[in-house]
Image 1 (tube, one colour):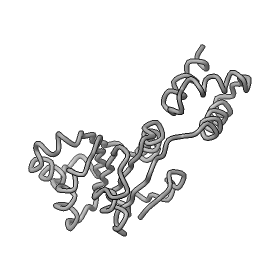
Image 2 (cartoon, rainbow, N blue to C red):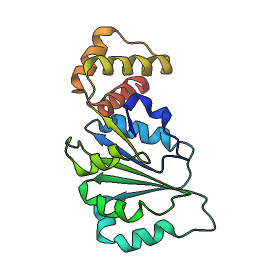
Image 3 (spheres, one colour):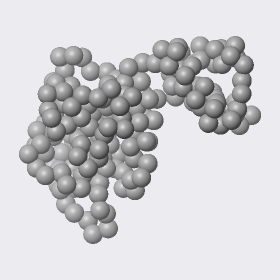
Length: 180
């Protein structure tokens, strides 16, 4: 299933067990991951190379149950097409209490990983494209509205231009202003 980055509320963690986030907008992806994992206690974060180096141990820990945890939420960072080997091993197994979120860089249209998710009805993929000036302005105005903080439009445009359309930098700059 293919979703747009503004349709994240359609992700149901009970139904969507394997999710792919890809694209260059790291700030938006991190924000979306935080929103999805807000109510989850047990979050395991792996790098792709950690999993590939010890794939047997990863798969074994994935399917073993613990008495102390109800569900597992696994985030795999910096994933590439190499992770398909692991996905093919787990695709036929039941993932009752396990959710896997794969965070990847920008993927080409012909990417095997992207095609794997786009053609599947069980898995979800979301593209995160770079923000433009208008999106950054909307995001900044929403942030200022929530914080009940005002700034002139000219200064806000200067801050947005300084951030080079990077949402994480914009949040950092707005936080500095707010706390100042």
